[in-house]
Length: 359
Image 1 (tube, rainbow, N blue to C red):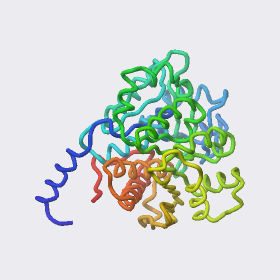
Image 2 (image 1 turned 180 degrees about the vertical axis):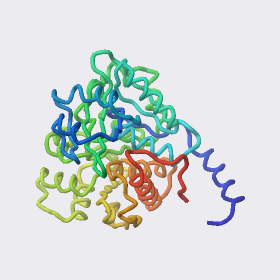
Image 3 (image 1 turned 180 degrees about the horizontal axis):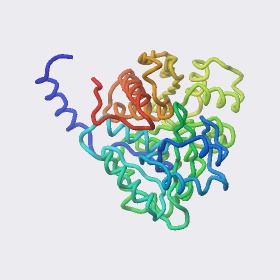
């Protein structure tokens, strides 16, 4: 890298070109609770070393017990919130480029979540209700393994009329030029997603969606296909891509062909061609755009440097969005996505060093 002086001037220029609230995310806010636990704790709650499950009745007391008996680290979490936090981290200044909406409880965990979002310089505006507790995700660490148990709680209670439709909140939506929502939110408020998606379409802004999980492609495919005509950028991984193709009766298995086929699905905004981006772990990332499908190699990493791959997908999206909101090239967006994912998998949970080292 060339020496200091010109670089710092360049950064100052870029700072002026990006405005606060330019990136908008809406989703399921969860307070991530990470703790090293013992085998007895896993056994007590019937957990396997690398489980990723939704909390059932038998897990309800687990969240209190983990706080009482183990040393817990708290982080703001949930797929969309992770991605906008990473985007904000990549951008650095100004603060509050990223806005986030979601629902929390009026409780101690809600207070911690607000504080954590603030520490990440994300402009979080939560809908607070008293019926359900703030959503939590317990990451129970044993050796190299992490068992994730998510209790969506309040995240399931987001209401369009009680929050998104309020004038002061809708003004923040209108300020944004790039929108990102993870597919998980389809299980909570389809009408909220559609309102934001239609706003993006009517104002020629960029609306991004993530397939998020195979079960979204299976159980929520009708909702997914209702939103799809408004999607300018679709994210997913190889498993989600395959499930989507199967559920839509594409009868193709090649990931590049699937990306092309999704790209050609009906689209409302004819001024923008749909971009489809599929990550494949350590394999290259596939992008379909225009007439082309390209595969971009990921940054190589030594197996022993990998601490936790759970946040990699969210981090990739965050890196991608950080450049997209600054009108950078798609190649640059992918490079930033790969960089962010490479950093995150070296840390436990979706955590990162103070400053990025991305050029």
